[in-house]
Amino acid sequence: MRARIDWKYALGLQLSDPGFDFSVLSEFRSRLVEGGKERLLLQKLLEGCKERAYLKARGRVRTDSTHVLGALRLLSKWERAAETMRAALNALASVAPEWLREHADPEWFERYGRRIEDQRLPKGKEAREEYLKTVGADGMRLLAHIDDAHTPQSLKELAQVETLRRLWEQHYETSGGGIRVLDPKEMPEAARRIESPYEVEARYSTKRSMSWVGYKVHLTESCDEGLPHLITDVHTTAATATDVKQLPAIQQRGSQRVECRLPSN
Image (cartoon, rainbow, N blue to C red; front, side, top):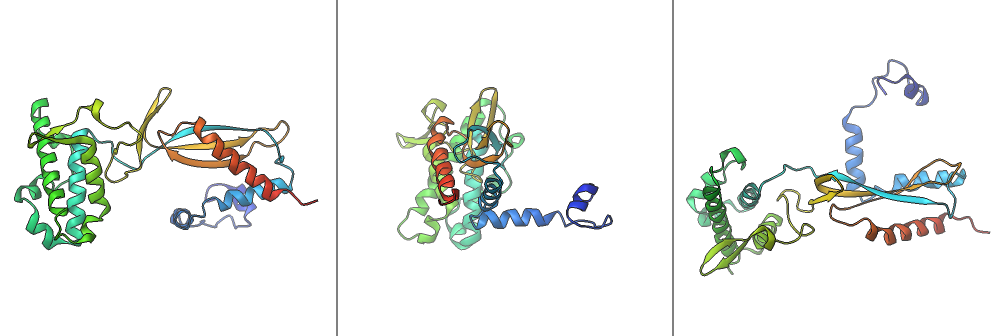
């Protein structure tokens, strides 16, 4: 709006109008998502297009998907385990600092006090594998304290603690009184594997030559000859969701949309 004269003309603004602050759109989008109303704008637009005969009741559509990157830092297995432990400790420190001081090992404050980054990890394969075992043992001790009958229920239900538990189940197992790091082939498939403790729904996936960590958005477009091509459905899934399995849900939403918009005779 600040740079385009045609937009100012369409909105009835003066040429000197500075436009709205950049944060307005972001805040508006956040309110839509928080209220679960993100489909209302698209639905209203499609209703107007149908009234103007831009959309046919039983027209042709096509669907494809594309990747959506998660808002996260890509982590190695060493970073992922230690960051998950750090996230759980930070959450506990914010709600129950006295409990954490009583149960945390003194070296944890040094080991997990700063963000875990690859350049600060031990060098060499053997040293890193030993570090991964150390982190695993720390997590096991913390979970044992949390599972104690005297631990407040509110601590057991923290999301970060649940993430720690889930990731430890995916990366470790107890064996002969010790802890063993699972081989990558023994870990869950990508659809279940946690990639970051800060965005637990993001998944690693590939599509042709593309690989990413995040989500997948499925876009459906009308494609009738002689009519505008319009986006009629948007649906976001886990990155590992296969395209073909989304078709029944897309068709159902499309049929419901047509049924509610067809004029009565």
